[in-house]
Image 1 (cartoon, rainbow over the protein chains, first blue to last red):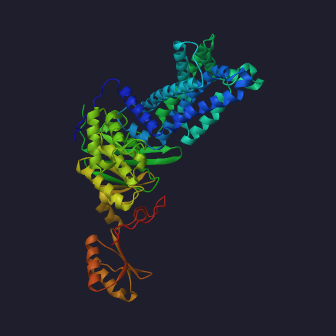
Image 2 (cartoon, rainbow over the protein chains, first blue to last red):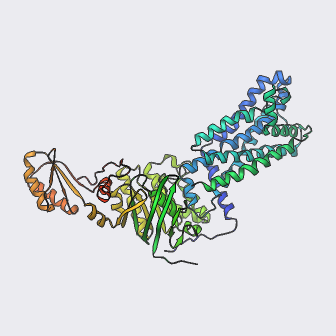
Image 3 (tube, rainbow over the protein chains, first blue to last red):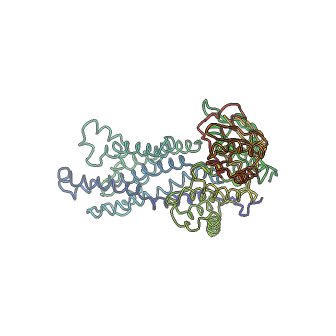
Length: 263
Length: 327
């Protein structure tokens, strides 16, 4: 029997297939927007909470405090979007046989993974855009100019993207999607809150300060804060980029290796 | 380069271990193009592992396998162009509509959008899902999901289809519906590998049956061969009135050609050649106005098959006896 519609191999097939699968991932998000809502609502809640709890005591006024707080919230939003989506999605697909079907198709073995990661980029953009809107609603204004705002958004998204490879790696290795979520949640607290998010690290108690200074998220938040507020960035952007590169270089190959070997 | 082969797929001496567990211990199969092979065995026999090797998802430790003439280890790309896999879990996306699921597979198979849509609509119609095409799969029943999963397998006009326990979790009516559709595939010339735990299912669908247990082939042949080996159908009659026992036993003996066993509770059991005997017996019982409380024609259960073939019960002895065509 001859196939009627014989598939042809065309250049960039892997990219085209990844895009088809990215669309799948986004369509699933549209029908089941829970994770993305979570990725926006959680940081927004933290913003409101901190703003009115500490606004007066830390910065003197909530308006001044928002200027300090918001850039960190933005970074948290992008980080959270990456921590909750791809890792769990990949895990679910592996466990319920969807990945088997994809792997029995004449497409790149990595296309489902790339598709999910590509869809994540759209989810980050969405989360960051919504958070900017919420920030504006509470009176946050960018003082560093449009280019600096874009750079800050880019840094937040870039860091979220690089961090998400850690979750992808975990998602391939652990047994259930629930465990992926649990691991993400447990690491969320020290990673996102043990930072300069709510107050400058100099004001933190010794042990927390040590952690916050090591924590890469602190550097991303500091970089975004400087960019958005139009203050000198110092070495923060460079440190952020080095961290992004380090996370990516270590965890992307690990995740891809683990994913390709999965049987 | 095209390799011509008369076989839909074949394997030779497949072996695979997972740690200490031997999943496959030298499995050889060969199925002519367009035929249906039923791979029968209890849980953990190695059925799914065979499918995963043939579908290029798993590399065997030793042995070789080819599909449509292409070696699965050396030409996995060529194999994937010709196969479709429908796993134990239906692998369609809950959040997407039936139509979107099929269009996506078409797009992954490099069909242009319009063609992918056309193919999806065609398959939805064929598998009786037209009305549900635009509804998310989350609202589908188990039978509908199975049908959609099967439709998804067919998008690329595969030459060989692997169905891993396709009727698991379906009630008998839905199962018959699915069987019709599987028969439709083989009528189109598709080679099918079907795994099942039920002799009844293999008997209903397969041209040939291979029985495996603990990673080894323990029997193979046509369903008729196998039944001859393990004994064919059995009729069991339970009478309303114990006083009729002798007359009924006489009827059974005459039609079946051997003396029925008298089990307790006034039940008579006798092996028969097939359903013709069954109808003959029902007719004669009626002639003699003998009332029955139970009357059944059944195939030997998987356990009975194993008992006969190996002299030992199935390694996973949790397969319950399933009565087949109840009268």
